[in-house]
Structure formats: C-alpha cells, structure tokens
Image (tube, rainbow, N blue to C red; front, side, top):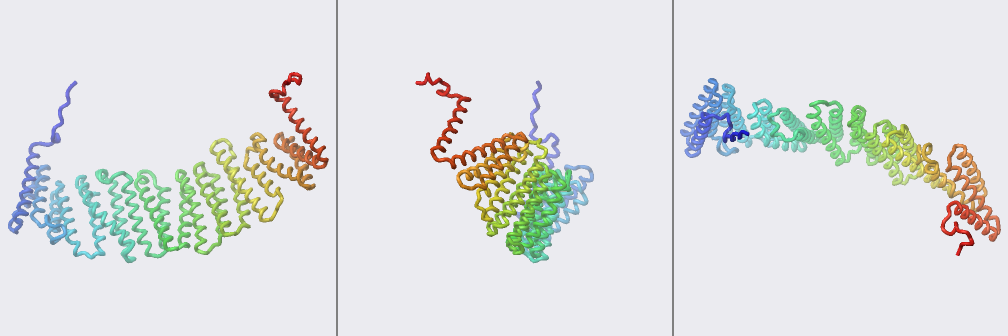
Length: 598
C-alpha cells in the first residue's frame, strides 16, 4: 500500500517568485510606515508618496503584461505606502477628510485603469470610510443616521457586484455602518418629525432590502449566517421603522399600517412559490406580523378601540383568503380569522358602541357560522377552527352571565347546542375514519350538554318546581350524547341511561306522593316505551318501561294495603325474586338438600 505524500506547509500552487514578492511588499510597506510615523515631516511623506506612485506605475505595467501576482503585490504595496504617506494612519475622527477623500479617488482611478488587482477597490473603500468618519463633526446630528445608512448602502452595492474577495471584505466592514444606521433610523422613525420619520423609514427599508439582496450572492454566505437569518432581520427592521413612521399619522394610519402588514404576510403565504418563497416568505411573515403586532400595541396603548376593531376586521379578510386558497396554511389561517372577528366584536364593549347582549349575539352568530364552515374542512383545520369557535361560545355566555342578563342565556345555549349537534352529525356522517368518529362523539356530547343547560336554565327562570322539568332535559341530553350510537350500538348502552334518568325520578315520586296525574302519565309512557321497544327490537325501552310499570304498581299496592299485608307483599316479592335467581345461579348452601344441612 503506497504511503501518502506529506502535505506541504505552503499551498501547492505557490512558487518562489510569489514568496519573494510577498516578503518584499511587506518589507517595503513596513519601511514606509515606519518612516512616516518616525519622521512625519512633509519631505518624508512626499518621499513615501512618490515611492507609492512608482509602485502603482509598476503594478499597472505588470497588469498589462499579464503578470497578475506582480500586479497585485505592487498594487498592495502602493496602497499601503499611499495610506502611510498621508495622514490617514492618524486618529480616525481627527484630521481633514479631504486627503482621505482624494486618496480614495486616486485608488478608484487606478482601479479603472488597472482592474485586475483587488487592492485598489479595497484601499479606496478604506480611505472613503476614513473620510466619512472625519466628516462626522461637520454633519448635523439629524443627518448622521442618513449618512450611516448611505455608507452602508454603498458598501452593500460594492458587495453585490465586486469580485468575491472584495465583496467579503467590504461586507464585513459594512456591518458596523449598517447596524448604526438601522438603529439610528429606527429611532428617528419613532421620534422625529413626520417628514423625517418617513425618510428614515425609507432608508431603513432600503438597507434591509440591500442586506436581503446580499443573501443572493453565494460568496457572501459565509458572512451571513443561516439562510433564514438575513430575511428575518431584514423584515424585522423594516417593520419596526415603518411602524414608527406610521404612528405619527394618527390611529387610522396606524390601523392601515397594521392591515398592510397582515396583507403582505397573507399575500406572500398564498402566492409565493419556488425559490422566491424560500427567500421572501420569511421577510414577509416577519415584517408583516411584527408590523401588525406593533400597530395593535400602539392602538391599545392609545385606547383607540374603534380603530383596533377596524384593524381586526380588515385582518380577517386576507386570512380567510389564505385559508380558502392554501390547504397547508388553513389550520392557522381559519382559526386566526375567527379570532380576529371575535376580537373586533369584543372591542365594542370598551368603545361603547355595543352592549354585552349585542356582543354576545355577535359571538354566538360567529360560533354558528364557524361550525358550519369547519364542518366542511379537513381534520386539522376543522379541529383548530372548532376550538376557536368554542372560545366564542364561552365568551358569549360569560358576557351575559357577568352582565346579569340571565334571560337570553338559555336561548344562546339552545342555539349553540343546535349548531354543535349539526356539526357533530355532519362530521360523523361517513362513519369510516376513527378521527372523524372521535370529533363527532365529542360534538354530540358538547351539544347535548349545551341543550341540557339551556333546558335547566329555562325551567329555573320559569319557576318550574316539578322534577320532570330537570330530569327530562337531562334524559334528552343523555340520549343526544349517544349520537349515532342510538342506531348502531347495543340499546342498553345507548338508550338505557337516558330512559332510566327519565323514568326513575317520576316513578319514585308517583309512588311516594299522592299524585294521580303523575302516576297515570308514568303508566301511559311506560306502556308506550314497552310497545315501541318491542316493535323496534330494542331491549332497553322494553325493560325500562316494564320496570317502571311494575315498580309503580307494586308501590301503589303497598301504599293501599295495611302495613302488615304490605310488609308480607314486599317480603314475599323479595323472596320470590331471590329464590328464582338462586335457582338459576346456585351458590354454596342453596344447592344443598334440606336434609343435608347442618
């Protein structure tokens, strides 16, 4: 097996002339910098600049001769000597910006004359930044943010179009300008005058867009982090600046800005596809959602309830549109639309344009409409929408109870229960999917509970004292809770609980109280249950009806006889029952002959 050759300490393309050029350039620039710092007189600086001019000329000639390494090395030497021979190496904020600006212009001219070396654009960019730093003292405080953002936009432009090495170095040095400009621009967007706010917001948006465009260049990936980081940052800073600028226009403008954020997020989620979706959707979602949230917080802080309700109503429209067009986003969009409409209705309370009863009516109507819509959706969207609708139903009842308006509560519960049962019936109509059966069963139970509560509350408000006013609604609720099980499950499991709850209280009261009408009605209904159960082939109605009739007959007989005879009748019946059962299922002692007993 051959032994691999050792890795050389230098890149395998490096040649001795390149090593000589690199060492010579370092020595030359170091000597020039040392002369400029130790003997900083005009004569020495002029000599260093002349040496830089000679190196620049050699670089241009080497570039035209096709000597790329020599051209790059002499260009770097000329740039270093030019910077060392000027006053640029001094304090960055002190000094005249004109020499640095002139030096940047010279380097740009050399770049146009000899475009191959990367040292010329990098040196021009460095000298330009020094010129900007030295001019800060002469720039008004109100314009410094615009200056920072302008420099950052220039740097982003260079990074977008320059060769990879220049683009990376320019991007790295642009980051501080970008951060300072975005922070200052956002602050001005929230605190400056109206016109200045929108100018600052526009510059911040432009800076975010430039950063987003930088994401498209593969050589810059190493500097920009994960793929979603730049889009999220660009969307966030843009939304923060726009929200600040919009806050100067009053609550209506704030509401419109929030709606614009929702519309941007919803439209992007519904329409973008391919690579545009991967790049722009995080921007739209982050910026749109943040803009909407900031607008809502601004309106809440200012107690502008009508404008906030308007924003929620406008927000519901695009979310419904997204739910209709994109099935993948429907589990989030559909309940969001329900929540926005419910929030808009609730805001009528603090603003005074609606009473609790009106808001409760709107919430119940929204509950019914949401269930009708959810019944036609797929499983995940149906469950999420049903949960949002359930919150509307609970809020409607709570508003009426807290407001002391107990009368309409029964009507609201009845309407809600009817809608819930309709949703349960529609959801479980196929009866094939386990998840659909689970949703349907839950719907039958919740709807039955709502109707039972409505019946009990109506009875209490009407002042009804009969036990049937409460037992019959409870029995009906148990039967409804069984749902489709009334048609396909064993009758004692589905019909039994409801029939027992309906019959037992009335039968007991008919026996213990002298109420002839109740006794007649119990016997009549027991006969109907027996006949109906036998005709339909159901065991539970037959057994419950016969049991109620027997208990009532036996009870009335016991009440009509003297107590010794009644006692004998009861004891005899009990003994007959025990004897029959033990003959069928004997236990120790009962299966033994009397002669064999101890």
